[in-house]
Image (cartoon, rainbow, N blue to C red):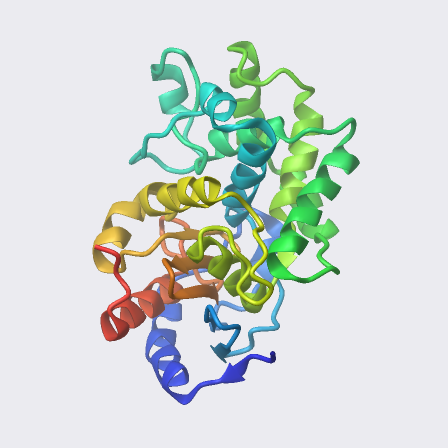
Length: 309
């Protein structure tokens, strides 16, 4: 079923678009600095398969940190909840997503949660396979299953750019290797992680992923179970508590839906039992979230009473 443009949604998008001028694109990853800061688009997927949109929803972006919630789901399916949470914690943090501080303060030195970089690297380490290529193909296949897009791939340019500038993530990996959280070659793990972050999607893909989380792991058209309900529930809980970096508390108050952002400007939203939402808006605020995307979700939450609280 094709996604239909919607006048009401377009009006809300135009109101939110003003805020793009208040942000700037990520430039610490050189390949991401090429994005147009004025872009903003949204797709909303319903449980019956209907989709409405505004803006250019076919514009490709990379998953970046949105991939963290997807690899968490895959690791939980493959390894089980007990194993995953031996290596990574449950707790939110007010620190930046790339901070090393809490690793040094915790005993044992495991990351506080799977949505910060250290936790995401620990989770990606759990993805099983004999090579980076085999493990990446497993992640790509899972994303394809969620989006219904069998042509899912990754941006070699973005992956290379991230790999070459991942000095802080290397530090996190070596610290965790010293403390037994990971035990693989750091360069191989970073190769996999940067390619995972560089997986390409569009707003419609994100909205399709969102509706599966919103429906506790069920695909709405085929009624096929994509992931166990408890896995979807765990992921949505982390999206609420940690999904918007260290702005997650304010987002819970202002919007109140499970969501995960990425520094490409993408936002994945899952309104329980109601909608999957995909947003792209590359201009970021100082926390790394799409500044106009946040405003767009805030306007939608207020107009349609989306908050789960």
